[in-house]
Image (cartoon, rainbow, N blue to C red; front, side, top):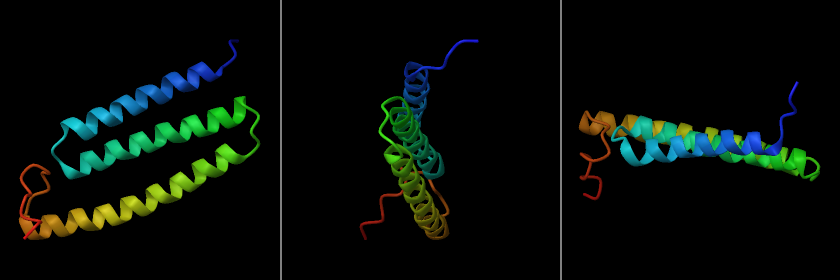
Length: 103
């Protein structure tokens, strides 16, 4: 059985981060953009926990990852409320077509 090393975690994290960046840049739907942001935050959490485990930093990485998860939950709740309000106002959640928010 092969040992799982830090490099394995970093590869998985970089794939998740790349997929998240791709989703944020290419998608027009606000919900899919938010899902891309969640992928980016999960990639950061994998890095925090992996470096905490393999760097012998104690529980600081896990505590930071827990804080990021709490922050992501609050962000998702607020963002979903904003998206629902935008849909109620404009009947559309495409990011490119909503340019009347300044008014």
